[in-house]
Length: 144
Image 1 (cartoon, rainbow, N blue to C red):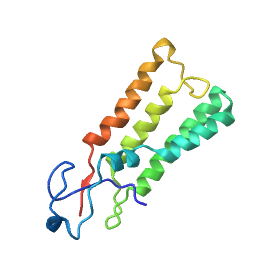
Image 2 (cartoon, rainbow, N blue to C red):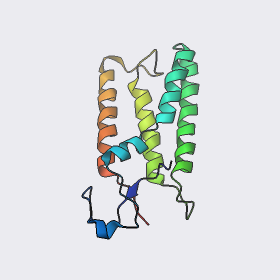
Image 3 (tube, rainbow, N blue to C red):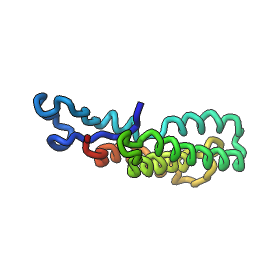
């Protein structure tokens, strides 16, 4: 499965174009598809499992976070490459890396490596808003 975000070359937004205009073209990714493709589930799953193994040890969590960040970037680079040109969707790669970073910052110890104090909930709120809002604004490249 490709994680490349597809924007329709016909019409604007999430409004469906008439069937005659879209025959033979790729279907545009809707908001739900974009959110699924932009959130790095592979890194979140690995970090979630690995943080249990790290047992709340800060060094282990930092190493795990760095490995997941690199993994997220590399996998998104490869999974968003255009089959024709080999060019990745850099915006989607960057969004996935930022999404993972925000998620890790939003976690508090013992699962997360960063202690934010009494206002730590703000990081979680920001991460939730980011995850919901970015797919509404980033719609990918036009379908070719």
